[in-house]
Length: 418
Ligand code: LLP
Image 1 (cartoon, helix red, strand yellow):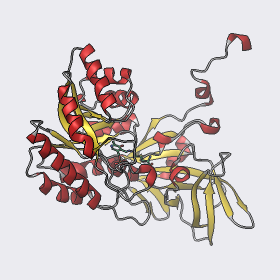
Image 2 (spheres, protein in one colour; image 1 turned 180 degrees about the horizontal axis):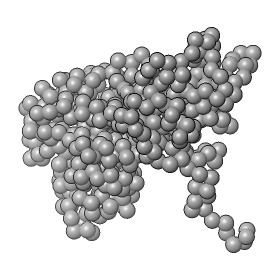
Image 3 (cartoon, helix red, strand yellow; image 1 turned 90 degrees about the vertical axis):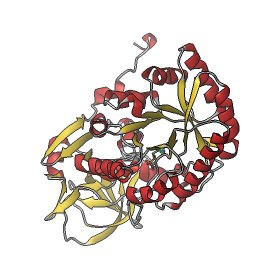
Image 4 (cartoon, helix red, strand yellow; image 1 turned 180 degrees about the vertical axis):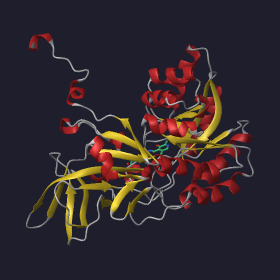
């Protein structure tokens, strides 16, 4: 569900015509719906009502400060994977006791920051990391609250690049080695064991992988109890998919219906780390048709947004719906929507049947609120685009478009070249 709809033939973001936003802000631009973000967050919160839980939004999906502030104000926590994300979460006002920190490569500096901030817990991914965190906590004369990220070896049946819970993945600790790792953690004096963490992948469109993984995790918690290790937080990660095309992913309520009965035997606080399912359909990427060309084999619609702005189609061959900002009845044509970047892989959509567009017209690349702006870059020295948040009849620039001068920010010409 989202708040980008046609009224007559004109695409609106909530109550604002998309065209009006582009007239004010320019193209390309990311546009977010305040309402959709909130509804998606509340859907999770309501689904798990009655069960002690913390929803920790995965910042990697969308870390715009206004988005984070909106979520934080409504009680959302944060799943962070870098010092930068920790900084942004705190700046946005996420309470530190709602911040969990995952990632296979936390640096000493990042660990120090998180310890000083007194976050809820580190999700540790290896014994080396465990030893490092113990040492750093010792130096700071504190105890590090931790969970171990275990890899339950479950196939989430999603794109291989975003599947993280299989044996061959770099993430987490193989579940068969979990007990020995917990025993090691217990021996380390500056660690406080609080939880178990798992995250098996992203864009998962069925409930079963969640159930299979959770069964293994609960069993692990029970076994740990027999070893005298009490688990307080069960962090089941993120991963719920969204409808990009023909998918029918489960609603958070279906997830909670499956998960909650499984938790009855324990006294856990449940942590969830949704990213895409909160942000994905809360945003669109709007870009303008520059030119069109017909090759013998194909038609191309060349737009002013490219893979540097929205990488998912190029990187994962991901499907994003494409809608004209103004519907028309012209003849349908099959074309590739491509960007201006000098790479053959620079496309936003391939083989799409759309009513013929005119140069200068705007199109919306749908479901771009997650892993859109956060994965954008300056490739081909293109300034990063603006981000706008719509609320009802109003819209707000929540990140200015970069300017050319931003492209040289921090760079220096050495003396010998002056
Ligand atoms: N927690 C952890 C530990 C994660 O690694 C991830 C995503 C999440 C939570 C959030 O997962 P979500 O609810 O968004 O599925 N760039 C890719 C997605 C990479 C996901 C990485 N980890 C894409 O554009 O599809």
